[in-house]
Amino acid sequence: MLTIENDVLKVVIDQKGAQLTHVLNKKDGFDYIWNGKEWAKHAPILFPAIGRSTDDHYLFGGKEYPMPQHGFASAYEFEVCDHQKEELKLQFKQNDETRESYPFDFTLTITFTLKQNQLEVRFEVDNPNEQELSFALGFHPAFNVPINGEGTFEDYEVDFDTKAEQLHQFEIIKTPAPYRDGKVIPSAAKGRKLPLTHQVFEKGLIIFTEKIDAVTLQSPKAAHSVHLDTEDFPYVCLWTKEGADLPYLCIEPFYGLPDIAGQKQELSKKEGNCHLAPEKIKVLTCAINFA
Image (cartoon, rainbow, N blue to C red; front, side, top):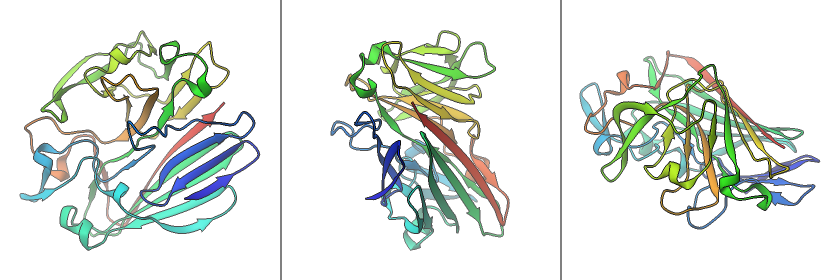
């Protein structure tokens, strides 16, 4: 495990998958990040796919390639490029195994930087190929709810900074894996607020269709909150394990989408993906403020 810290926060990152595993409030002695055994992840990086591909495969140039759920980046050790007291830079490049499912060169660099009570997570995807690179990239942090044991899950709400007056979501079906069905339905949000209940997630993840620039997790019964800047990402997803009533909520900035059930996707035309020109770099940043 690798650590960065300042006077306010101590942050622990697993070199495998560049996964954020702890954000510790040093003054009050609690962890913002979920570490329960019921869902054994904390904040996986999703690359170069988000969600499930139809039959766990996609097409590129008419040829079929396998792709696991959420891609493969979380399964690999990242290289440490720079490690200072308040900043850590990790990097992952293609290898023989990744080329079997994703026949492209790439460099994925993730930089974690502390600035007082803010953790900035910066993602850089470098395309060294002579052709366009199509990929999805998502950040999947799970936050303890309640925060520091203050209140209950149902005492919290998620507030959205968005120009939309009412939010909608992609309808999700299970086969039993979760896929989109191509429909858009109203969300349970009341205007720009979503009161939290476990029942809201009975059908699985919620991916909003409207652009959301920031998300705040808070409660009038809690002294602490979490605020994510999601402006660089076209989609935001919320999820907690359905049917389990567990005390966590994932707030996930997405650049990409799960497939529509039964529709095998051509990678170069995949809905929601980032399409990066040859020899260009795409930078996406998510800043998280821990109050």
